[in-house]
Amino acid sequence: IDAKHQLLPDAITLPLIAIGLVFNYLFGFVEFTDALIGATIGYLTLWSIFWAYKLIKKVDGMGYGDFKLVAALGAWFGWQSLPMLLLGASTLGIVYFLLAIKDRNQAFAFGPFLIISALVWLFLTY
Picture 1 (cartoon, helix red, strand yellow):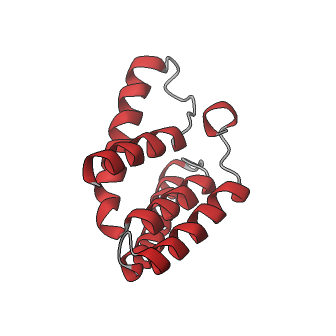
Picture 2 (cartoon, rainbow, N blue to C red; picture 1 turned 30 degrees about the horizontal axis):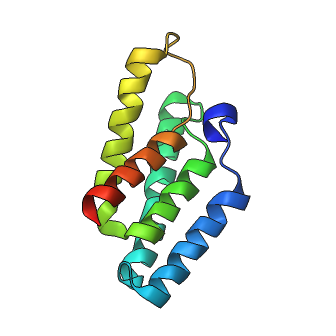
């Protein structure tokens, strides 16, 4: 949805957060406290970047769905995974931007890069 419409609906992102937290509470893929901290830090990190960018550039730099998707990744993988997930997604996004985007002011979806980064992290780490 994000790649085509630049939209990450709450109907997808919020259940991902909740299911990640419940799953980790019940089954301990990661410690529940790490998952809870991960969801919180994930959201607040992108929220902070959003507002810093908006204050400097006077335009939105990303959508709220990105905050919630990173919160979901934090809920599933714990706070310790967030730096590598964001680094991976950012690297992929930069490469895409440099190779595929002709208009430097054109917006593009970040969600697909977050998901690819999460899948790579999942297969390499677990």
